[in-house]
Image (cartoon, rainbow, N blue to C red; front, side, top):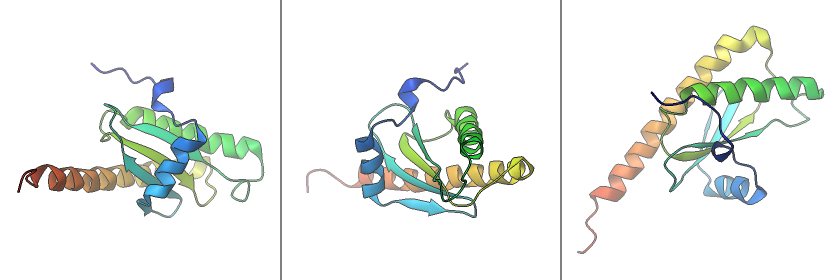
Length: 130
């Protein structure tokens, strides 16, 4: 059974890692969340979170949003393709919005898996020596 821990290797930490995902320019938007993604060469997905002060002034609110998103990722990490994700909060959410945010995150993960699977099939189906 795979472990559900959120390990340090599953985190995007460095500025260069965030920049490379943003510069890849692939993203999906929803009501509360925007997810930037880039396929990686690792055997696991990685997560970076961005919650700006414009969204939530209080550090308590920003940290709550990060905790919730980290938990969603932790529970889903074995179903996500090998991509680097940067989840950017677009609109403040609170405890009363938990179920809606969970559904939104799940839908975005499914879409990212579909898009990255399509990209992998295209690249693997093209013959190397023509």
